[in-house]
Picture 1 (tube, helix red, strand yellow):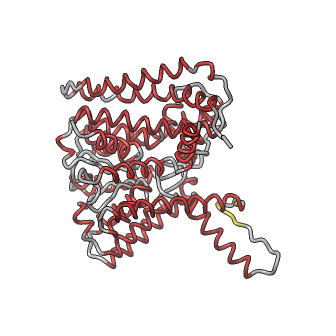
Picture 2 (cartoon, rainbow, N blue to C red):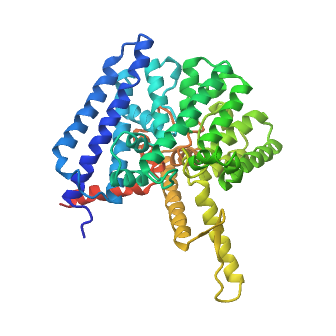
Picture 3 (cartoon, rainbow, N blue to C red):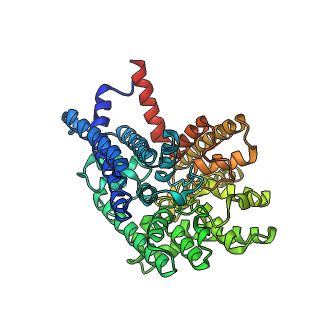
Length: 476
């Protein structure tokens, strides 16, 4: 049975064209920084930007008759997956042209930035042009909120907005309409970004570093502008500001939106926010007593892991030498992630809590009198069996991806323990790693890593839908 028709593909192409134009414009923004610092690397930004805008305009015009066609969720998922793929590819071309690295490395760097993973392929990021450093930060900032979400702010609302919004693993609404929701979300994101820049500058960070680091921290991306990441600054005040921004980035936008109206109660009462703080406090305290790691490094790293930011104050070599129990604890946090409706990756707290409550309810039903149904509630709302089942299916699928990646790393001869850490970090868009993901990584594993980051950011299903659509094409 065929699930994808030619009409479906043309609908996808038409609506992808709008996003491709937006992606092209994204490539042109860093030209401002490029010219400010007299680097004049105009070619590296204009050519990929023009290619994306040109293809986008062609798709829009050639398939213009499909504008009014009803868009379904499958179309939204295909468009979303393709848009993220295209953004990673075009961004990779920008980085390749500017730095003369291989196209695989360039696309890896771009995908890592866009998905908020934050693993860099460069040995020395401090020699990169300011334009590229800003471009990576901008990719993280846009990717943290979502490529689709940012682009939807500037296109006509309607069914396409709704389906594309859902396709990027979002279903929360701050306002009745998607357009209004995106507007409020961008406003909150912008305010926190400005706040982060001001706080960093007041703490003594140079303005360029403050802008780029805020972009990468609020988006929970973690790809900083220094080789030692945030640890470069050797400043506890900067570390504390980073911790606060990471937690803000990992908190649901709905909670942020309600803060003023509820006079802060929405933050205190939010289950996911409270769980994040409890996990940070408990795990940091536990690891302090079982290791001799500096307390600030522990708190910073634990926060970075649970929020899937991947920023660091400890070097890769230092982390690799930490006790196995500490690393295992961090790996467990990598799986969980932060709040749904935020900028984080991984499984997310609400799914983890839902799944655990479902298991506990099943145990209670077995122990209860025959025929009794034990209700499952979250934040006072009853959770359906379908929701519990969906959470369970996603977790199983997520673990399958991690296992397959881990197996491939082991097949290529990498250390099993470090490989598992890397697989979890990639799939959860975390970014911390123990020294095996760099420019020397096998090209096949680089491509596998890119797929992990891509699927992790879109929560797997949209990418699988796109692959399934691709198989339909080859069947013809």
